[in-house]
Length: 98
Image 1 (cartoon, rainbow, N blue to C red):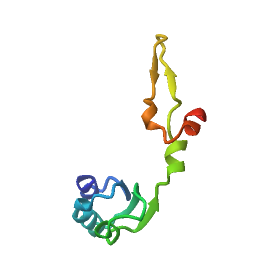
Image 2 (cartoon, one colour):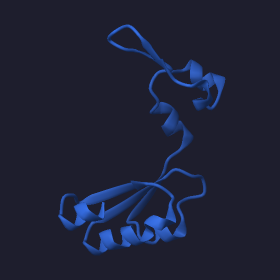
Image 3 (spheres, one colour):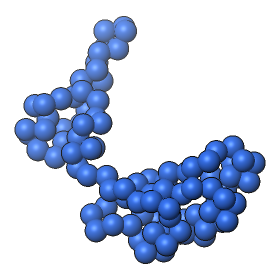
Image 4 (cartoon, one colour):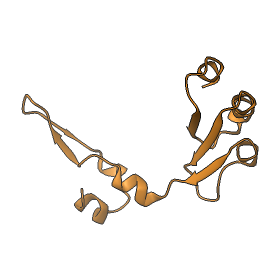
């Protein structure tokens, strides 16, 4: 992220994390004139160290994650099938909708 910002390869970085170890990198990226956003994967909002270096913050809600999952089974061209582990589903109802 920092390397690409330095090389002016993007205008806006969106970080999917709540790891406050990234705060310094976000600060440096913003100092290079880039817009920084955080997609927060935890309830309660992002770590304060991250938030203070972000131009915008958006939550990732459970419904977003459920809507973004692949179907529970995917058939490959050779006929074999890949199945999603049942523990990845939040509820039996969620599994039935995919």
